[in-house]
Image 1 (cartoon, rainbow, N blue to C red):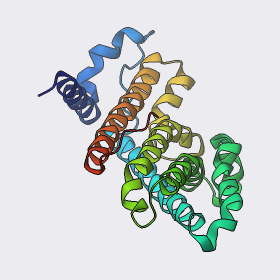
Image 2: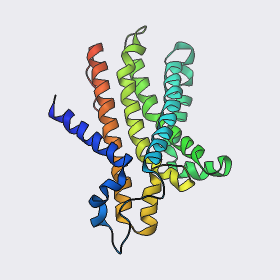
Image 3: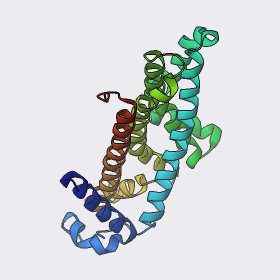
Image 4: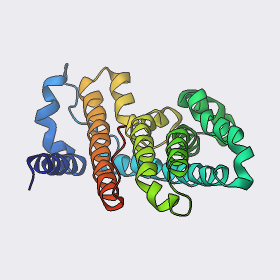
Length: 231
């Protein structure tokens, strides 16, 4: 087993252990507290927050993927080529309006909770998936472009997921159940331990997901005899 894989497995095991039994790691975060502040956030289950966080990211990514890949397929067919400018403009909406702005616009319509966060992540995730799907479908031979384009599309999904894992934290500002709740609690109480543990879980998850999707991408590239894109 490669050392890099062993390190990743150890990190994953520690992450799971911390999420399931965070109080067991209180000694790690205790030096970051002051004035008898609690070292571990216990107002909500860290496991529940993590699962909710990942669920929101997964739903938004699936929706973004379906629309982005669907649009890419449409505009690369002869009958849909004229819709390319419109499709690209649609995919760019999420990058034009930052997630915070989307939340501000969505809350009056959808109310507080998960829905505005899903909309923000969905829009923000469209562009990388659409552009990668478009690249894959337009640079490969007709008739086999979709199977061969899968690794390229996956690279876009990888980027979208990692962005969403980090961005989903802002959902807690509109009462969505995400790990941003821990970070916000730390900011409000000036508790660095809370901020560190929330940021640490989000950061480690993003890195592990990135590595896992990169490994899958390499496998697909090897099977199709392609070279991996740098992204």
